[in-house]
Image (cartoon, rainbow, N blue to C red; front, side, top):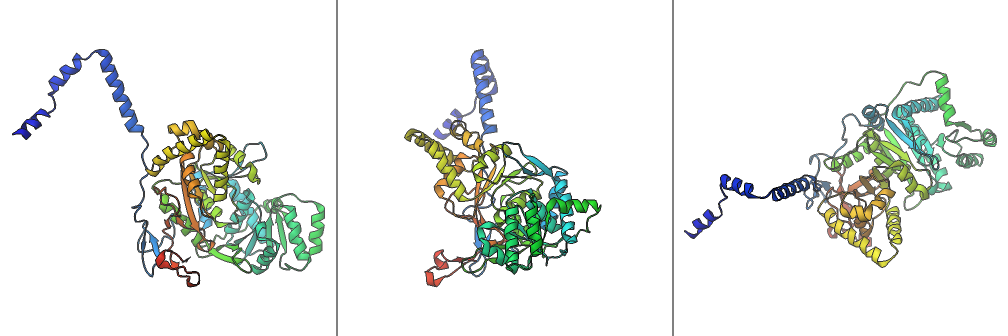
Length: 509
């Protein structure tokens, strides 16, 4: 009986009674009630919503056989080999981007204190076909057995040279200074490289000296991106090496009014031979097919496709070496979706200036640079009170991040972090860090301060680039994520070092 009386007491008032009550309120009270309702409705409709993880974060991978583990995303019966049906080679990746954007901007570069200038997708296509045809006219073969060296810093001509090779099924072999002169000579001989495309006359002079000393007898042609003078040509003639400018190779093909018949590669054809320093002895050449690269960036897309997806409005800042697969893979993802790539001026000290001019949305980075950013931010907070406030704001916003809310318009952003975000262009929506472990302290702070999704990856050149990746929604630090859907990962015992897979330690394979 008491329960019935209680329920009757909780009954809503009749509509007539409610109407009479509202009519009895003064106008000011009704206006206030209406304003409160409007504010509440606005807050509900605009409040930040957390990112929904693509899988159960407590079960991001599963054991399959012999202790190997696979991603929980994708088909459990097979590994992912591609994401887009119309992009199964690196040549098709470019063609897909061209189809999406039409003749939109593609490769950007800038001079000091100048805005970025852009080559369109069609301009790059034309130049790549002309350059590829020019290489064939110099004796190169349209075949996966033809290796072309590329010895240059990041710049538009690097991508044009790469695409020229893919247009005629040739293979790119990157060369880079940090390997050292002995390693460069070894790679040229080991890969039987007869043609090298390089950026600066100083590098060409070193290559010619190697030929003159009889250390790289197979090198016959050098194509230079920059201008060069007569003395270099004289040294080339003494060495029996043909030196030509890249523009001259292209212009001569224009003069003949035709390009060679295109010969695009297949998924199983070699795309690149990437030499790594290795741990002992000479550099080791990792032979990667077009299918390898397509599978790897397909895995990246599969993990993030429900949360953040590349599009033709994306802009990537290119400063990590293109000779490394990490940078090349992320750039391929952008190209496949019709995005833009802007190159830094070549001086890491001017990177912030380049980013302000470019305003990128995607930022591949290494932990060393993240550490510099973190140190610079706190060095500018030059009192204990400022440092305390900065840490307090990061911790408060970090609570949102841990709930899956990623945004750059909170009160903490407006008071503390907007200048940090503006120093990177103010439009970042994705940062990917790899190549070394990231500090959990730095990662937690920057995830809060930068207001964009920050992912950490682990990889090996032998695995194309990435083999593990942060699962969207898992914004904890101190790990490198779960396996990508394109590969399996297994730990092997290393008994002599007391590493055992049963304890979560071992060699990754």
